[in-house]
Length: 261
Image (cartoon, rainbow, N blue to C red; front, side):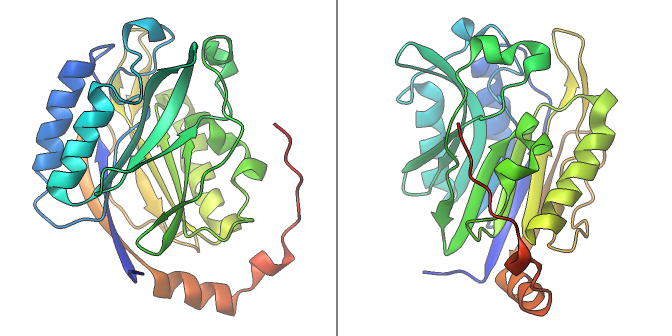
């Protein structure tokens, strides 16, 4: 059944370094504190650990504690929940976005652009495929952090409605985060949501949040204060997408790219 509105909760939070149990506990409180009925809850990148290059201490299989915890929460709240975590599979580590539906079904996306500046490419196996998730009649494209810098990968050739980034994006480069989230919304005539963490990690990298949602014209829809733990709910509408795509047919003139992994 297609829903004309999609209510999305953005959870901007600090993360406890390499401590999945504690992160799950604090996120359980934040998720349960959402009293309004929402369709989707978005958590940051590597929400069980922070952006660690030591995956062996936090990695889990897909049938592990965290995915099961997400399934229980999604069923209990009757909402989808998404974010990324460290997954161990077939002898490899992945920075994997999981999108858990209220039914308990799980969709995944493995980060394509591993962050070479931090050596992520030497530790985590890069993904090779996008995954446009069908949920309540909305087509959602989940991507992860560094993917934001690569517009060809995000190009709206699949007619998605919502482009979704989860991140551990550091404060010194937050201007790029702000500018690129807005640009991705405008160029793809799509809603674009980015959820970034706050706080200081064990490598002394500081994160200031700037989590936000933008509409197809690049108008900011949220007002989440930087450097604070906060949850904000935004309502997206199909009417907004349809009206402006029909009026401004920019996507009809898009270039066609052939992507190679």
